[in-house]
Length: 208
Image (cartoon, rainbow, N blue to C red; front, top):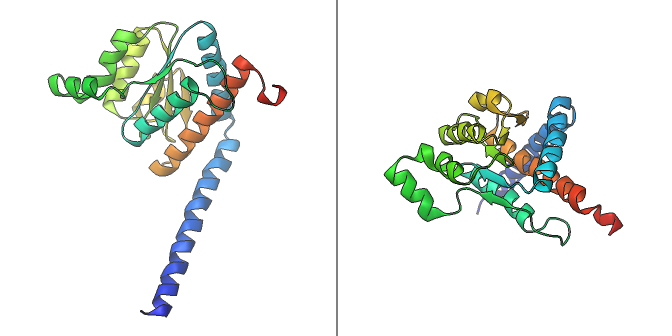
């Protein structure tokens, strides 16, 4: 084994790791200086808290990694985040794979979320729509139906917002064009929302 080459490879990988971590830190620092985004996150917390107080529900949709993010956030709210408390209605719209594959096969994939929203969406509900590009057609179609249903639409996107930008009641556009960094921040923002909504509805865990 060539020890010198192995050592150089290890150092290169470590440097790559450090560079990626640094990029993540930079995006978080950019969020801290983005007053509009911070205000929109706070607005989302207030809106979701009000939704739950009015017996509404949260519905979420995304594709690929964004579908996983949607399911992750739904689990934090319907299960628990920091402490034991009553469950909150939050559902990712892709979890019924029989429905998803049937509608994609019988109609087309761009209708899978829109069709489900026609069945379950109500005016007091909120839609969290995840798309790093802001241009995913099935997400855009779902947003159209959500507006028809008089739901509030929160868009989780990247820096430019894509076609979703002007369709959101609340736009949470991460200041990055790098898909992995955007998705990392979607979870960070989602966790912030879960923590603060839980706190608003059930009290500060520090005082429990």
